[in-house]
Amino acid sequence: QLVESGGGSVQAGGSLRLSCAVSVSSANDYCLGWFRQASGKEREGVAAIDADGSTSYADSVKGRFTISKGYPKNTLYLQMTNLKPEDTAMYYCAVPYQDLSATETLRVMSSGGDFGYYGQGTQVTVSS
Image (cartoon, rainbow, N blue to C red; front, side, top):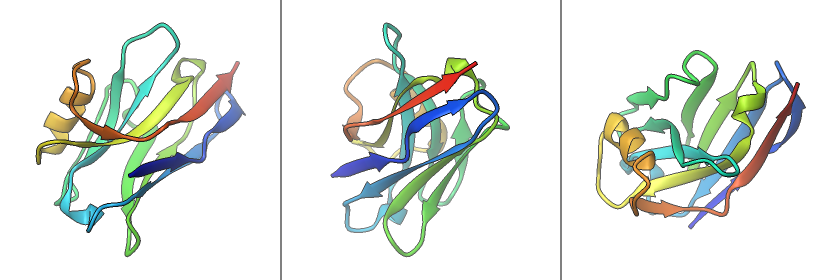
């Protein structure tokens, strides 16, 4: 089970930190990721972190978003800074069905296919 929280409405340039409670035996053993979907647009992989802590980011968020895992609790975070109106979307945390690298997880999250488990999402709205 994956439960996201932390979304909200902010002005451009603001920050938010999203959290995801991951109900698996040990989140540290899995590659986890965040993807987003804006209204009328395709799913976009945002960030991923693998079991070794390696990360991968979409070009659109590099330098602004940071993905991390919480210890010892099974929590995934997405720190978002310098938010832009184009970041407005529903954000989901996800676990792929297969054990993938961070780069592969980012790719499958953007693939549009059935790639893994994800939660209900949390809405992020950025106003200009």
